[in-house]
Length: 258
Image (cartoon, rainbow, N blue to C red; front, side, top):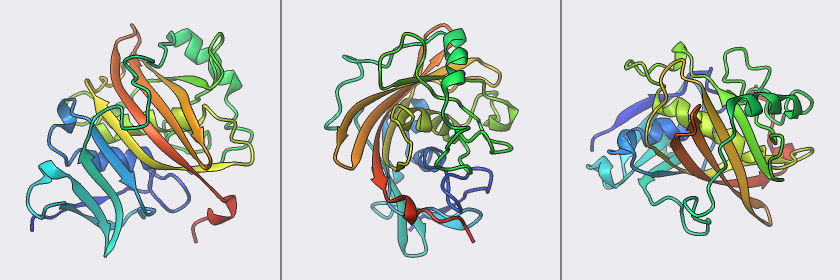
């Protein structure tokens, strides 16, 4: 049975002691053929993937990763990635109700309303924590003139995300698409974990290419919330889109590492 491995460097943290959901999902999706050329992949996160630990990536059918792959921590399935349709069942079609492009200057101005510096549920989050020393430090917030339940944030991929071809690697692109979805909600006193993320990346942005990520809440159902996010180039070209399912959890369940 062909097996490869994945190690989540400590830099790519999410909740304390575990990997950032978007980064892990993207890193696993990269093992599914076609993900690097626009194929939609759905990743289900089922257990916290630990940092700095050798994890196994195993094809679902034991031989061919084209059917999907699992991320294993010992005998525990941490995540599963399979080819998918976008949007998944239960989501409005983003082609009919797309995330709205926000100009770069408007997205930058939205940062003033980003609530993360005041009360961030995960100060170790690679994507959106203002305290992460080497994170993306995205600032998703409602833009001026934006509808309730929308966010926008600028993103400028830097050299640390270079996949070796002058473009941001797939895992970092997925990470950038992650948190702008959940910040469409008021998170005061609430904690959500990423349950599933389905993404299609038409073009990875170049290192140093100014981008904008826009998010929209689509539905709230008891303890789950559906959101979408879109990565745009500065001229409005859509580069990637996602659909996400977030699960609300008891904040007491999230304990600091160690």
